Image (cartoon, rainbow over all chains, first blue to last red):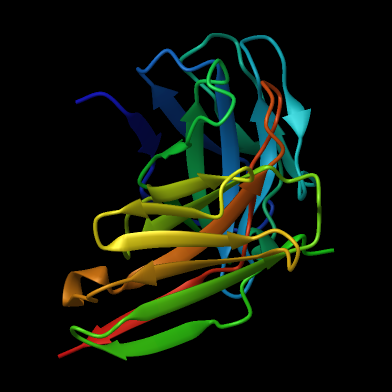
Length: 114
Length: 113
């Protein structure tokens, strides 16, 4: 089934540890995004990539990094996790060839930092 | 600064009645608006959208209304069904190939029997 796959679905992590959330899409969408969802704050953009080889910062990029080596993969790395990074993380993609193209989301990765 | 706001964190509606979810925005450059629906433990899914050149878009039980002068949009669900119980996110975008969606904080809709 075409779509976005995120891994892991859930993870408990000690503060200070490094963590990479994986995201893979098979829709050949150029643009990919990482959002975090927090109660009362909605979905906030962390980082994005408009095409392979390029990345950009969203609203809340501090403490996170991304890479986009190819079209399909867009991993999100927390170099040294802190409890405020406890959240549900969603990867999304869209085809920017459609200027109003909707976002397709993965199922989410629930991260708890203790 | 929250450019897209959903001031009602939750809403409870009886089955069969109308649900009205509201959204306000501050950036007059937004020219396309979308609603997403999210069930627990799932990713958000696209529901309906509207261009700023329109004031209404209808898709089955779902209708989105846009009032540009008030910078306000609303989602109407008629009739509401228990399966509509979810969190609804309003989103806005300035269209273009490098544009990004800005989301509201979400409204949790509970449709009761």
